[in-house]
Figure 1 (cartoon, helix red, strand yellow):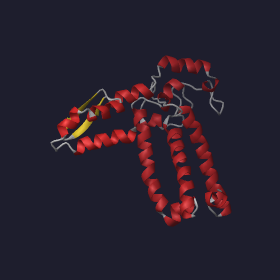
Figure 2 (figure 1 turned 135 degrees about the vertical axis):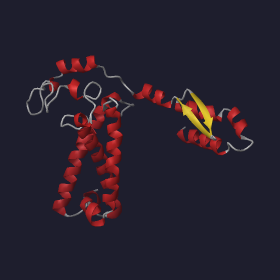
Figure 3 (figure 1 turned 90 degrees about the horizontal axis):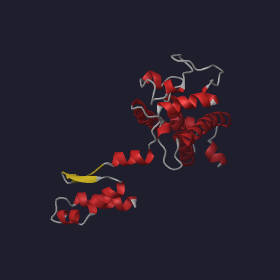
Figure 4 (figure 1 turned 90 degrees about the vertical axis):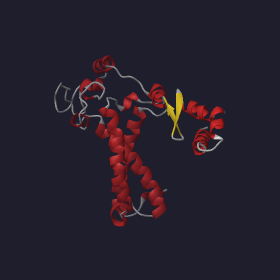
Length: 227
């Protein structure tokens, strides 16, 4: 369906300057493409078809509003919100730990300092996403090159270029929703939930660190020798 949608959009845009353009529009190709994206309507500007209302449709399908009342209720009933992993009781305005209502982007401060605090929304989210991408990349790259992660990053150098380019990209894409007052818990689509991402990210961080330590001891790529 996606391929058909993109193909029909490309055809309609590519033929915009031809005599057939108006008949293609009348035949419903443009409206069909936009409707399959969930857009409310479409416009043509400079030969390009622009679907309008896609963002609203995506928000309606994937976004969940998290209210202050729900957060306060969770603080009172969730045992893990009553004390941190170090046993400290969250207190308002403290460096760590802060109450949930203060550390969440929806209800707390939306500055970079707050988001990147030890208990902020950004550190675990960004590190987990980088770890998931990193361990996936390590498996493929080791199979293709036969080099360990360290060799790919520092000896060969190619992996370091991709790493330096990828980190700011993932960090930026993760920070923007938080600055707009949206945490990862506000989005879900089928099996893609914030809870699943957190656990997959945590496992990936442990797995990537284990991969580095193991390859440091055996001096060989794990995915090439054992998988």
